[in-house]
Image (cartoon, rainbow, N blue to C red):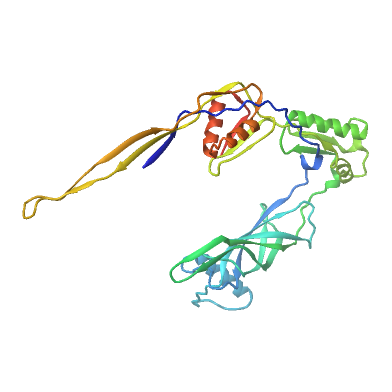
Length: 369
């Protein structure tokens, strides 16, 4: 068994780089407008037409129940009948009702198997009502499923690529009920920042006021800017938002480093800074090998065969390059680029970043997932 443990050898980089400036972003990409939001929908339905890849009704009795209900609504009496088809599957249907959706419009839906069906490929979703959180039906879904994977099975082996038990139906639901919301009667609209920041909110306030040439907006907190519709003298709230949503603002952001330990991915902003710090990284290899010996008694002698353990243990230290120093004000992107140039593995790089943060030299939020 080979066990690697990070201990010492050196990594160095001393580059001072000027921070890059973020470009101006449209207001519609920075904020959410109060009242302009979607609503989640969900429904329970049945998929038919599967090629023997549906639910096993013995393990999914709810599939048999919904199938019997649908057949009875269509005038087919199945009371007391025993049917075990393998071409149907129970599914959950999810969708998002966009803001200002009108009756008759179509929305995309996602279909996901909830039983033991192995694939929804080629199936057809039977008419399924979609409910919102208030229990009301707002859309009805039906159509042919586009599955996102494939599954092949033979006598002695099987292979699955992607997720064949989930799929989508573009435009698969028709809106039947509209959300009761009179947007035209709003006297003011709140602009909610997707990434709250006091500086960004202040810049949005200034840009909007400069556009109208008077005070029409006011920053309430780091995540909210209030827009006075009456002060804009626009024909309606919709006209006011249409006027300002294309205004550009240069957002401010906090320094943050996001690390995904499972994939070894590191994402950082260009404004991350590192103070003067010394870094050392290396490998200590511990080798433990088991080589047991079987000892048997002599022929015709009394005794038992025993196993004598024999273990070989060794320690190897990979040569290091000494202790190195990172200069004041170096950007993290420069440090990571230097580590990549030296061939440092992603997982080792993540450990280095954690250690720099623990030493108080990494001036950014370190988010580890």
